[in-house]
Length: 346
Image (cartoon, rainbow, N blue to C red; front, side, top):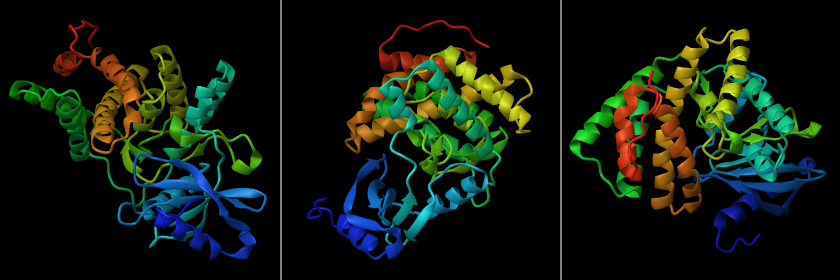
C-alpha cells in the first residue's frame, strides 16, 4: 500500500513489524478490509496461514478502550467477537482476530434462499438473547436525556438541512411533545446491554470453524446500558435492508419467545412487547434520518442517501399505527410533499 499521503499507514506497518515473530505477520500484505461512518478504518494482514485485522482508530478522534472493554463483556457472555491479539491504545491501534469477510448485509445482497436467511437470523436472535444477559459494568446509561438529544438530529439535519424546510414554532412544539413521549416510554423499559447497531452490516457470516460460531459480532464499542427492545428494533427494522412487516413480526415473536425462556424482562403479553419495540424503532429511525443527513451534508458521505427512503418508510409504518404520533405524520407529510394518510391507531 502507498503510504506517501497517509502517515498512519507507515505507523501501522512499523507497529506490525515490531510484533512478536511467532505471529508470522507480513506487514507488506496490509490491505483495506472496511471502514465505517467514524474515523475508524480496518485492514487485513497476513499472519502465516491465517489473517488478522488491524483497527486503526486515530486517538485524536477515537478511543480504543471502550472496544476492548465491551469485547470482554461480550466474550464473557458467550458471543463471538474479535479477540485482541495486540494493542497500542496510545497510538489507537488494535490487532484483532479475523471473523471472515462476509457480513450478513453482503450475503443478503449476494442472494440467498429463505432457508439460509432464516437460519442466519435465528442465530442472530439467539446471540442477541445471550448478549442481553451480559454484564453492563462500566457502560454509560442510555437515558431520557440522551434520547432527547439524539432526536434533535431529525429537525436539525433532516428537516432543516436535508429537506430545506425549517419547522415553524407550532410544528416544533408539537414535535417536541412527540419526542418527550417517545423518550419517556423508551427510557422506562428494562435495561440490558445494548449494542446500538445490531444489524446486518455488523454481523459476520461465520461458516468456517476458525471464525467461531455464527454470527460474529462487530462494531460494539458504543455499547450502553439501555432499553431491552433497542437491538431487536435495529435487527428487524434494518436501515440497510428492507424487511416487510410479516417478516419483522416473525422474528420479533421468535426473539420474544427465546427471551422469555431465558428469563429476560420482556413483557408477558406480546402485544405490549410489540408496541414497545415499535416505539423504540421509531425513536431509532428518526435519529438515523438525522444521522444519514449529517453524514451526507457535513461529511460528504453520499452512500447513506440510498437508505433514507427505507428509513422514512419504517418511521411511517410505526407512526401511522398510533394516534399519539399524528403530529409527527403531519411534519413528515409536509417534508415529503405528501397528502396525509389515515391509518389505524391504537
